[in-house]
Length: 253
Image 1: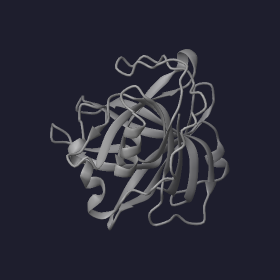
Image 2: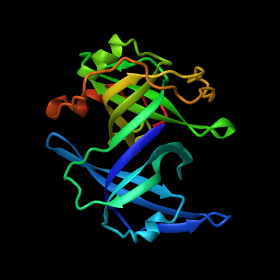
Image 3: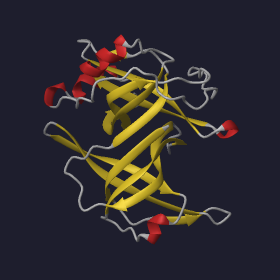
Image 4: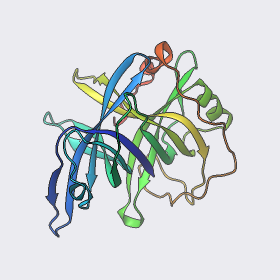
């Protein structure tokens, strides 16, 4: 599960196509304003609805909207032949909103398993990890992998809960992005979750995160190990710059 609520403005009019059996496909991009301290940047989120809701409400370029849906990983081959990954939201509902804040939170809730132990920065004040999230049921299951970053307050609680490779967790956070330079010199954009809170969950079966086998069943209700209320990530010099040394370009982002 990778549930998300995106608030922002359409960058262009909705593009409409249909499947071979006549199901409408309505796609558009929402631009969200993100900031850390005095550093602002846009987050562009691709959205797809497999119904005619966007056309019924007459969405147009510049419309201020709130979209609720599920974040999915999309793998593709770039023009240079390299494998790339981006993300799109499969929309469930959408509504107009009067206006979008200059810096809007993009709430995301994810349930999945860590693909490796948490990586720490040099001062042990921040950490990063990747979680594998299953979508679908039975033989129609797919998996999305998404990076997550956390600061000291959340990191301390993760370690006290002994969260490590293979641990099933529910993450609550803010979706964001950053630009980076790949090893071949090309520019890329990494999408990640800024973790504000978490809880441990139970799975019917353990997922093999190394081999990518989708063996995990739907998660059971969260265990009774509640955590304190979310604390926003610090701004300024303690913001995303702390994570630069944590990036691992061997991961699919």
